Amino acid sequence: MRVHDDVIARGKKTVIRRKRMADAADEYRWRSDPELAQYDASRPVQVPFENFLRNWSFDYRFTDMGGRSFAIEDESGRHIGNLMYYNIDQTRGEAEVGISIGERDYWSGGYGTDAIIALTRVLMARGDILRLYLHTLDWNVRAQRAFEKAGFRTCGTSWRDARTFVVMELWREQPVASAAAVVTA
Image 1 (spheres, rainbow, N blue to C red):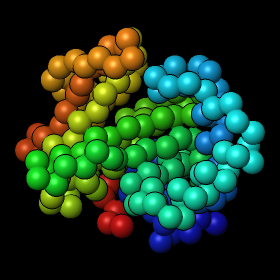
Image 2 (tube, rainbow, N blue to C red):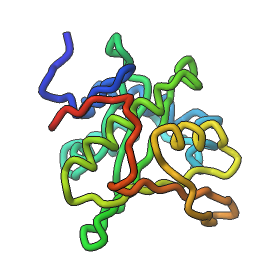
Image 3 (tube, rainbow, N blue to C red):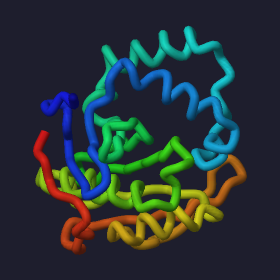
């Protein structure tokens, strides 16, 4: 049975919830996968699980990770990925969002779009966020389509570590896609 007070938002296909210590094993598996690391423009984790867990556990307990990084579950409660917001600029009223669907069986099934819509609605309802933005690799057309379905629009490009990223944004006055219901945290 799912703990209901850890739910941040619900979509039609996903539940966004606070992370749990039990999520560390999935995250380690995903972050150790070379193909998934390419989608995140990062290097795969190569430390033993015990070292990863020690660092993950510290972040989980002593940082604001719990308030800004969430797990994505499918309808049956399976942890399929992660969603977060960061780089918050309170003066400008904006934050960056990121998502990763770690379970390949859920790729191209609308789960990412559904999850990003659910989080977007919650963040926009807070009142202090005027703009959400993200960076996705220029070759990751699947992600770009998912973000477009959630209401994000391309606003430029950026470069980091010899990679080109498409920058996309969503302003509060833009319509947010209607795939998710809001649950307040």
